[in-house]
Length: 243
Image 1: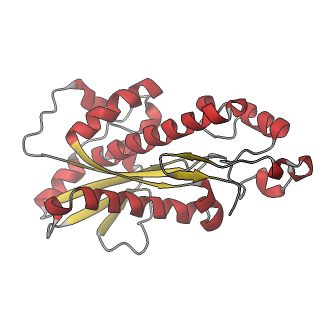
Image 2: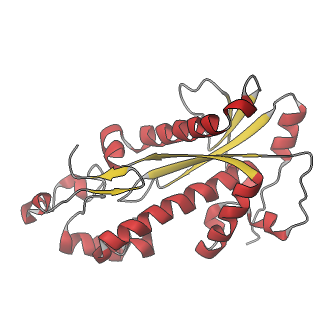
């Protein structure tokens, strides 16, 4: 199957219609059983002088079509050509709010991060947010446009998807150093067979989402795992078994 390469067509059309900045936004980590959900926003820095002859631009596409090595390669490249914002909601927030609301919150945090970093640049400028999927972000003051399969079609959304994915993967790999028995570095917290087997043997660790199955069913509580959890920190994110 031929890989679809995202283009700047949407950005070009919206900039021509009067917008000053077109922000692509996407998330990573809605499905895993552990760790945070991470959102990123990306907008091109200098569209008028953009040189697309570098073949690396072909790798700015849906992050799921890239290898881990390719995503890491593109991380710095995207930061070179795009203004970027990142938002993170940890597992506790996910358990408290539910994953959909936590995802929206992470997206709002990513936009806020971008706005703070580029406050002077975007002041009194017209911005629009292109959201991957069929729904816009609720209660957001900026103009928005939902684009189905946006990470496959729109360059800015694809760039955001890569930043979100790499950021989350790096975090979960740090967690792997603390809890190597779960194999987080390999499956990134998704419910693989090896991950479920580790859960059956050790019970959840401090970064597991207790509102997700199989943790939600409390099948491990009889093993006394709740007494074994300890707190840890990673880049300001507090991991704990406490609500």
